[in-house]
Amino acid sequence: MTSPSSESWVGPEAELEGVGRVHALENLLQLSDRIMSLEAELAQVSTVRVLTPTEQLDAEQQLIAMRASLPWRVGRVVTIPLRVVRRMLRRTSNR
Amino acid sequence: MSAAPTLTIWVDGIGRSRADVERVLVESALQAAPGTDFVCLVAGNEEDSADWAVDAAVLLVPLPDDDAAVLNRLLSQTRSDWVVWIDASARLVPGALARVESAAARFDIDLLYGDSRLPGSRRTHRPAFSPIRLRSQDYLGDVRGFRVEALLRRGGFGAGHAGAHFLDLSLRLGSDAARVLRIPEILSVSATAIRPSTEQHRKVVAQFLGASDIVAEVTVVAGGLQVNYPLMSAPLVSIIIPTRGSRARIHGAESVLVVDAVRGILERSTYASLEFVVVADDETPQSVIDDLVCLAGDALRVVRWSEDFNFSAKMNRGAIFARGDYLVLLNDDVDLITPDWIETMLGLAQQPGVGLVGSLLFFEDGTVQHGGHVYSASWAGHIAFGWPADRDDELGSMGVEREVSGVTAACAMIRADTFWQLGGLSLDYAGNYNDVDLSLKVRTSGRSIIWTPHARLYHFESKSRIATVEPAELATLRAHWGTWLLSDPYWPSSDGQP
Picture 1 (cartoon, rainbow over the protein chains, first blue to last red):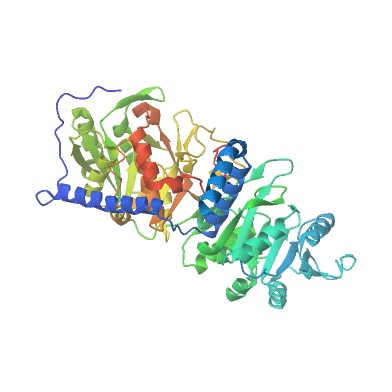
Picture 2: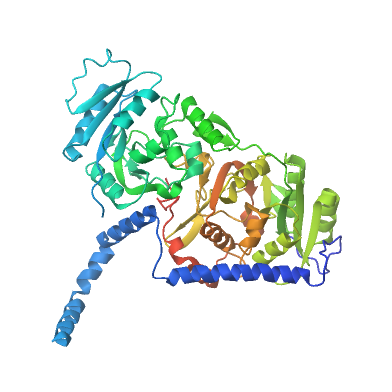
């Protein structure tokens, strides 16, 4: 790899007409990006996400695979006491 | 769930053995609901098939060479909601028809297909519906469902398509990709994951493209069809290259990366309407700037970068100075292999609905660096990373143009107005994942991303930058796009390995 030059290069730099136009355009890009990022983030926390049929089936299959996995089944066994206690508490509070 | 749709099973025995046809008939009869109609398509005339001892419930239909009229008559007489087409060389797995029936009942769709398995082998995950890929390769498998009403509405079977009718129907029904469903379960055991493309397939694709007002040349090649989209005009293409003027040893020789990249494009690229927008760090050696000016002359715009390193910001600044209708985002450590790379990418970028186009990139040692992005398990990676150049998956994915979840910004083409509409590359990602973020912005804007193996370049990635992942960038990516990173529709096996 080269070592960087200690002095800044000189040459025929491209220019844009108008004072501050580069920064204005950079800001425009940044604002558009910010809007898209916020929309994306909002979609992540939205309770309603419209899935295509293919996505929906895919998600269901992943769920089935997860519930069939060893970690899931072990977790279900391990948390049996907790679930029993929770159910008893719920019954007690409903009386 | 709506009422169960009625199915008619069409067993396609053209070119298949009688034993195969009878086996598939039995397999489907065992799975089908009572009252299901069965049609068996065989080659030849009625005399040829007179000795076929099929059950009275099966309608045996000998097809002449020009078979569209017979098939359309059959279709118009069909009483059911769906035709399920099964290639007789495949074996239907238990429960396959129930899966088809369930999916047809649940969703408002016109076409469905599913995964398959090779005999004694693991599952072949078929990608989500991929219209551009279907032009290059009939990848939908040996079991498909077609809604009869949609077939009739679209004119039924086309004349002169014998041997490729079901590709033709898939292309036409797939014009509305939202009405196509991939069932992510195994429906059949098939002798091959992909059948070779034939002259009939070529004719069908060419006719489909012609009817869609898409100018294209279709040829049969090893592994599928190659579709070239001739350019109707020669728009200015701006190649934006951020650089700091690094040097490296490439193929045993000393290279000033950006100078050699520009030289290679100028000397070997066949597309003439180009400009180079080089965004050069302050510390770029003077000799590099001088060489670039000498090489590219008026086709060069040099833009200064005096701030801290931020790949996205450098690209964005380049885009501000670019005058082209199309932008190529390019790293400085690349060297083109295919001289018509711009034409190939531009032809795809000009297709309706396409937002971003990527290429096949190789490391210096000839192994694959990029075959498209794959997003899975909250991670982003490259398809086929490190594969030998001749390696492929069972679907032949490395040889065909296809929809992907994303492409690398090391070499990607995008329309300039799309780049501006999407806000360019996000400054949140100074070094990594800016291309993943851009790709996901492209997809959420309703556009598709296409990767092509016909535009090939070397990418000497490790020569110019040590890839390090900033945890903050990964966290931001997951906050913005978490659910999009869980599983990849276009590379559903998700492990990158065949």
